[in-house]
Image (cartoon, rainbow, N blue to C red; front, side, top):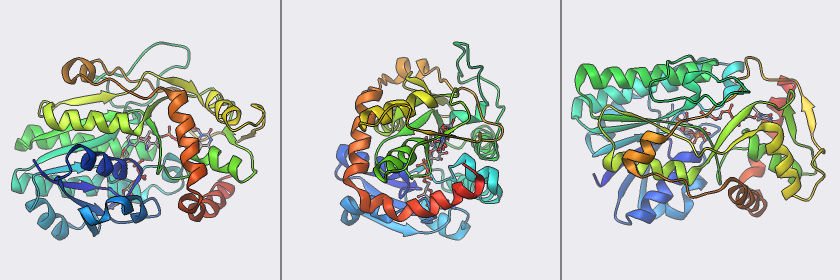
Length: 331
Ligand code: NAD
Ligand code: TDX
């Protein structure tokens, strides 16, 4: 499975995956298919640009997808509209890319009988109560809350149906919140780090009691490699580090690590329909495939802060437009 088509490989997790794959197998033949939306940045692939093929294009373009899938061994599908707040503002690109795009890829994979891995999110399961130790498992019923999570749920169900109905050789993974280098500044952690670097304050939605489980992007991608190598066809694997923190705790920790008083943040209006808590039970991945996350949250957060501090030319071009959008939303 040396020839790999990586959709969304110019985005946050996809670009980290391309770097990681080439570290593991310097001879891997990687083609990245990415539309370079506002979230994609070809610069993320600069360090490996002479070792991969880059195709700027849309996963909904059936003719383009057909040719690329024909000429590969495995498709790793990261491409998506990925931001909940944007989906609340305008769901239409989420329905198109996440549902129609996944359908387009599945049809090509079915035609040429190729291996497919679908990257998804724990948000498809809805949320869990704040004061509980309940967890999502691979058999939790789907109950998405936002247009983003509903569109990802739709894409997951298409993959499952293509496995069952057509025998497509697919696996799925649903990961918890990721952090690390190359994450767009619209997301919680980079938004607050870059606000502080610019002398502004972090923005906490509501009271900040909502809990997320934080997994370093390299640990996520390590899980994807394990599933590609030894995952069972048709199976879903949940990925999560076990590091659960409230948004308030995250913002306080970022402030402290950046030498600002931990109370130095603004409270802004809450996100509509805001999911309370996510927590993945990743026992199946750990026992079947030997996955163990290597990054503890505080060390990973510290190195992520260092990365944003060292790469202002990467994030500054995204920042003013992102904050202008948040201003319109009142957040
Ligand atoms: P991202 O927004 O950083 O990157 C998405 C990439 O997809 C971008 O490069 C964009 O240009 C590309 N893209 C968007 N629409 C496209 C289209 N129609 N055709 C081709 N390319 C297109 O997203 P991310 O955070 O890297 O997320 C990657 C995947 O992981 C997504 O499927 C997301 O649902 C999933 N996921 C993300 C997280 C997280 O915390 N970020 C957690 C769990 C799962
Ligand atoms: O400025 C902020 N202040 C704030 O309190 C932002 C941007 C977010 N938040 C809150 C909302 C969420 O409870 O922080 C939490 C995390 O927010 P996001 O970074 O937008 O992530 P989330 O909505 O949890 O979704 C993420 O994890 C699952 C990814 O964006 C998805 O792609 C992934 O599927």
